[in-house]
Length: 480
Ligand code: FAD
Image (cartoon, rainbow, N blue to C red; front, top):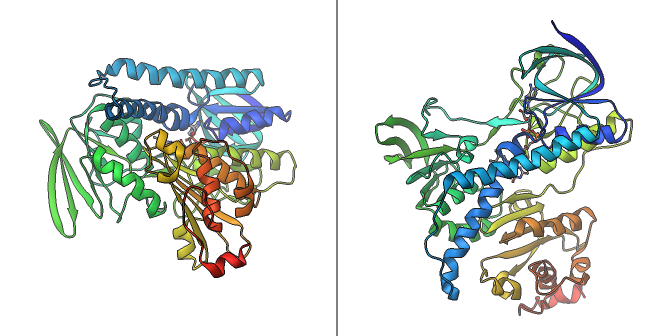
């Protein structure tokens, strides 16, 4: 027996895109239902992504700092790791945040439905409820926010408990003596950092010529110097071709420059990217169209080919980031409520929460080169930062990408502890169209790492207080 429910707006998927959309719609007085299989909102980000990974990275940082403290005269001894307790701590963080979201949904009178939705047609969803029943939901508007799933690679045993995706790795099944991370993107490096701190010997295999494709090399190099010490090895231009489960481990076959190699590992983490979650949800029963990567095609208001069905977040493709999903949520809800709106951020920040962190926003130096754009780059090395020195962390750099004619800041890149927090100033500067002078004239608190942004601006003028790097005379004259 199935009931029918009618709503003005249904949001399918309760991740940072979906719950942000449902909450905002409710705030605007729209009758909204939120469908997700979990009992509380949160999606990948809270249950098996951003939040559990950052909880564990915080612990990893503590272990590393405690180890490093011996150099300052404080010795803590080797850490004793209670994996059950650590897992409980991580799970408690997730439960606290998702439980909080559940309360916020209730307070806003969002109708939450715990089930899996599929489109029967362009105005009806069939929902298989988690508790066993089913229901039918008729909607005027829908926002599709079904997110993404880990991508796999051919030749990987599907049924081996030793082979993990990011979700399995975050469950901390054990601390493998030897861990292989396949994929040198941010998820693989972050989780590799966690396991290395817990005691695993970590090897990373990356198919392209370097880790973190997309980030500027000078930023990545800061990280590599440290990862070279934390990880056993990082193999680039290397491709995994096969894996075989053995009695005492998993044998991995890989090749580089036509040289075939094999090695044994206790566990393998496959983190080779994510794919949009667009299959098995009945999209073929609607006019919603997909691109060649199976992501939903949307217009600047996040409208699909079906005018009253919108799509936001990972399901629409790159960048697959939580904050992009939440921003799109606002655009889609504004469009539904008849507001003039469009998705046109100048900068969507990217952060890699390794140690050091890497963060960037706006134009990167490599993009400028690819586009043959003439830009100037002002760099402030953290070896000249008082705050970085107090932390014994001179291994950082802050840089600004500047249009020399207009003096406008086009991009910001930071490598160093806390880069993920610092980049927010860069985003604001970019969105406000700040010039390099605006940044140099903004008084930054001392002693903080944020001063590195101001000093990078001063570097461009050739008069950074803590770095003697005079600007070439002709340029200096024209920039007075
Ligand atoms: P998701 O969060 O993927 O949520 C989709 C929801 O839809 C899920 O709950 C799913 O169960 C539900 N769903 C799917 N199909 C249906 C259906 N048919 N019916 C009902 N419900 C359905 N991003 C960052 O910005 N910063 C980070 O530090 C970061 N770290 C990450 C670390 C890891 C290990 C991973 C895996 C990801 C990380 N991400 C990070 C990416 C981030 O998690 C995603 O970009 C974000 O969760 C996307 O949000 P979303 O709303 O599009 O969908």
